[in-house]
Length: 277
Image (tube, rainbow, N blue to C red; front, side, top):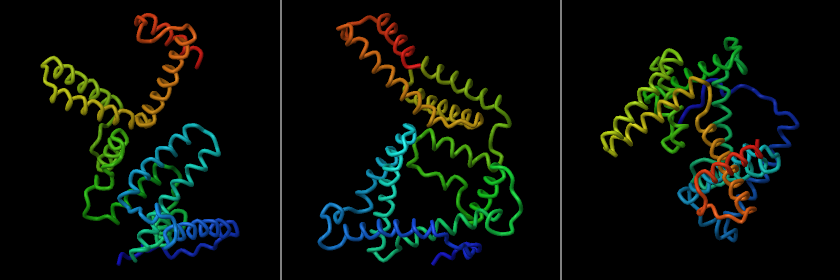
């Protein structure tokens, strides 16, 4: 059995608030247990870890959308839906005799205690987020000794986010551009190579070079301390809003987009941009 981290026995006195929250989480645990029990919900009883995969992804993206929307109630609701997925999976493992929700909570609490010695034990004082991340990564590598430094980056992550995380991991051992100018030059280099591949008419080569360009752009964003995944999501959202504005303006004029010239579409696009700015 995996041993707990050495600092997991830190004594934390639960506040009244923590106990009250715990009781509410326990209520959710009981609801889940009842749904999965004989005589419970046929749909919930039929689910497995494999069938829940798509729901987990869907709920994660719905939570991200709620965060982007900035509204409190949708955020709370989507957090609940994601929490339900965690409780659901823990219940399935409990039925298998592997672990339960309490073990899940203990595991993450122990990890947080161990990786924050500056807060919970007499570890060296840390004053900046960068120092915290450095300590976190060193402790993480010590715990996962023998694994590739890239092993902690899930293959299932969205590609742009995965590219950033892979770049961050490699940078921990010094495999990185020394400055912003270096990575920007790499972006230009990859763009030139994509142009060359397109000029050759080699589709496979062009796809590889496009991938190299996107990877370089992700690293450029990382050096700028920006998240390309968030940036692209924002651009898509704005494009969607503006294009729907174009559709509305065309409808108000009794025109069909398919019958309009590009100059007319561009004029509507600019008007939609002004109205939404």
